[in-house]
Image 1 (cartoon, rainbow, N blue to C red):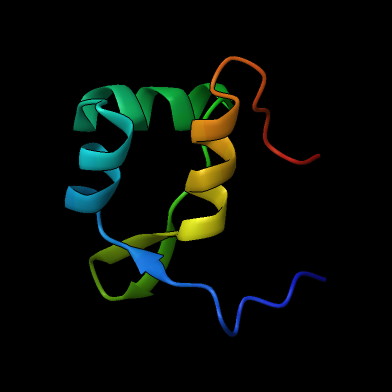
Image 2 (cartoon, helix red, strand yellow):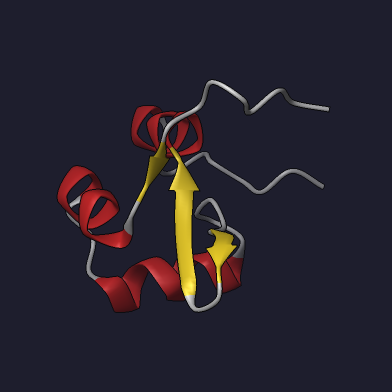
Length: 67
């Protein structure tokens, strides 16, 4: 299991700024398995792990969700 205790969480605003993707495109790619999924952090609030987003930025065309 991955230790996420020191990993930063990014909100949607930060993810869209880093990836230059729209909200709609991000959620469409999550459904297709070509973008890191969000993690619920409270009721109605989600975030992404920074390392997942950095890995996607490094290889956006080759990134696939872990099986």
